[in-house]
Length: 404
Image 1 (tube, one colour):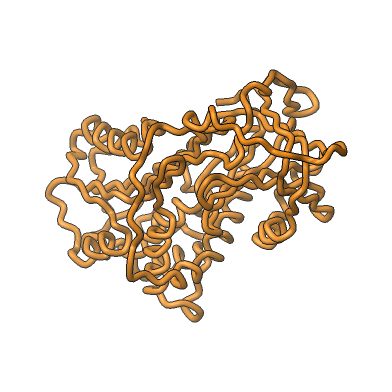
Image 2 (image 1 turned 30 degrees about the horizontal axis):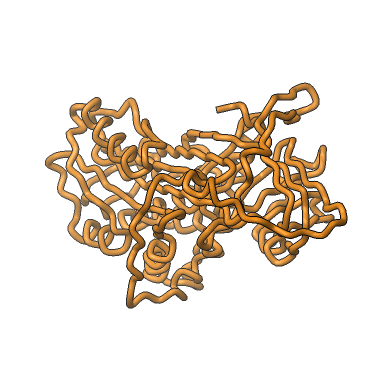
């Protein structure tokens, strides 16, 4: 009988609020940025594939997840799997070992951790892994060494035979790492659980040019033909980067944060939402990034805070990752004993507002032409992508801003 592992992805958030000063990380030396570039395409392909699967299943609900976080956690599992279980994960992540060696995959993700993890006064990005191990279970030293060395994973001993205490330990850890944004990631733990592997990501950034809260006002948001809700709509007239994609019938707006992160807001033309979802690709993202041009615009975007929790067993099976959940799972690289995965949980929270609290008094003055600028109003369902160093941190679809 296979033992049970619970695999959890703890996820947070991009929240445009500043909470005091943070120390700037010291730059990491002796790293090869090319290693990260080799795997970026895989992360982006995985992001689009998983988005399509989740969007098809989400019906009329808001969608938000971190492809980067899920990708990283599955890559950690590669270190503990073998045979067909291992091959399925590699394939699900889009890797072909005739084109890239396995150590290059882990080296690329190791480098990505260093490239992404960043902290300064009004910009913060934390990503990390933690392994919670049942008391008395001794993982193979090679597995422990690799997850520490390559993924900087923290390892904690946990009394899974006392499920409530174990849940509290794990949830408290994730709550702390996500600055209180994710309070309950795991629940209903099985007392037979052997380990819980978690990944967390936390992002907080301030717009380079904030919206002035004085111009935020209540307006209509058209969820669908039958549903209209009231939202707090932010407004700013000034210089923006935007592009109209005639092929996909959507308007793309790019807004930068302080630092190097960017959000793309994508507004499909009325009636074109499903068409956009179906035809979305990495090429679409590249085309948008290359074609947005700087011009004046009058932009309106709703303030919102949304969260979503997913059981990823079914979505991952649609990507061909199935055996790890069965009695045929080969996770012998973890403990040398038979194990199987019982569930994968992913939770994300996303908050968008005018500015960071510290920057509220520092509204930039912009000079714009006297001619009337184009108007771009996000008052119906739209997509958004948060990128940092060309890696997709978060993807989402806002269908109803009032739906928590």
